[in-house]
Image (tube, rainbow, N blue to C red; front, side):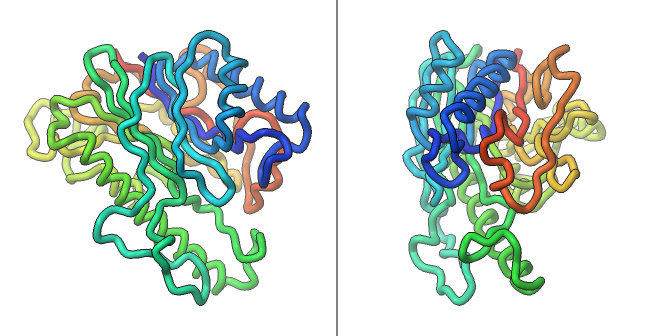
Length: 325
């Protein structure tokens, strides 16, 4: 089976808010372009981000053809976008999390604003589902953490000065860190201290690179990784195996180890992390399209203003995927 994640970049009905296509033609072009990629990818389960309406997801399913099961989080952000799943197999929702993990205080998000209880929630809900895998139950959580792209009061994308840029960079990091900790707690619930026996995956747009502090929070106990120098770690038992998640990034060919291009810099900010039992059955990992279809991975370079992308087809992210044997 092929398990993947893809930020669909503002899958919204036309004229339905910030980031939405402005015309029916733009919307149809976007849906058809997304459908062509998903058809070529042929996933068993695809975690998706930036979906606004169930109707928009239904339109994508219609363009795909065949039988698909869908689930969307009930918790959207201020623009109405949320995470969800497309699946060839039936899904059962187990968690739809928006409250910060216990003992995490509210975080500051704006100048001069004392954090309130509403700031003790994730930007968007984290959705977890269970489905029947090829070797027993598979539990998967999808997330979309706070973006590194900064926005300022009055819908500005440019700071008044560098002090404001620094402050809002810190506010974004405060929230992304709290969200990463909350997602890690959800992962621990799915693992239930038994990652050697349970198939668990955590995936989505984490909005930072592999060795960023927020991404590393998701991994759990320190220890073995998928780097070449750690190959022998899977021969010897490790006390952290039951709780750890493995980021599949090192299994992706280096030339394709990116999922977005920001200011002309290629970055891998979309991730799949898997439990000890599942990591041993990965036969292939990649971005874009698999096999001979994925030789050319072309993505637009995004800048500070996401509005520049409004009305364009496709997505500014590439899918990230693993094949499980």
